Image (cartoon, rainbow, N blue to C red; front, side):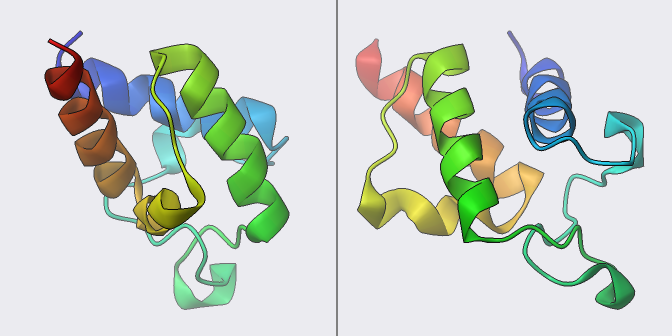
Length: 90
């Protein structure tokens, strides 16, 4: 899976797991996930981060520890983390 395909999967996970009222295509790769919507973010909270961590773990077979929670800044940062984790496993 290349980077663009992985970003699409991440966006789909964000929308489906968190029951958002937007489509995956509306999420920009660099959109700040935890910034309020009125500040051009997605408006996620800490519970959303935990849900998303479980989804990322299950989908990509990577481990996200408590120390890694800062990866949830944007789709780009999640993708970069997953990519690095997958390279380590090789």
